[in-house]
Image (cartoon, rainbow, N blue to C red):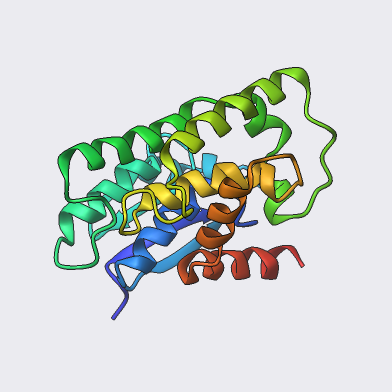
Length: 211
């Protein structure tokens, strides 16, 4: 019998947002199917996918007869619908709000980093140029934000792991992976989060897809 959950991802496995929901599904140990969408040939704009996603964006999660886009909404949906599995958000209300703040921040801000250190430089090993002045300013903002939240021992943000750890580490790894200067505490945090089996499962898919 097919799984009741299907995650639509981009063919090159470079989407940080697909990564977030993929990790949520893996951490919650939920069986799911995965469908690759070729965005280079506008597969995300076809009628079938457009009808499911509503936004023509990657990723989209389909659960039985319900389809949902936007990865943080998908993460929260999985948390609500499968509460008996590993929790991917903190149980404390303030920590949970902070986790959502982190997710919103890395999705809506820091555009110069997202442009000049695209995830292709992480997953496809493209060689980027030095950061521009705007990107350096964005990097300083990101580092200041992360430094205020990451504990001194570079452990998880809230003691127990949460999906906000993966999302923050993904954004920071745009710098770390490309040897841009970051404090050792932050680099250590990124290395630890990147070694998590659920993240490494995605990395393996990206390596396979991109040679």
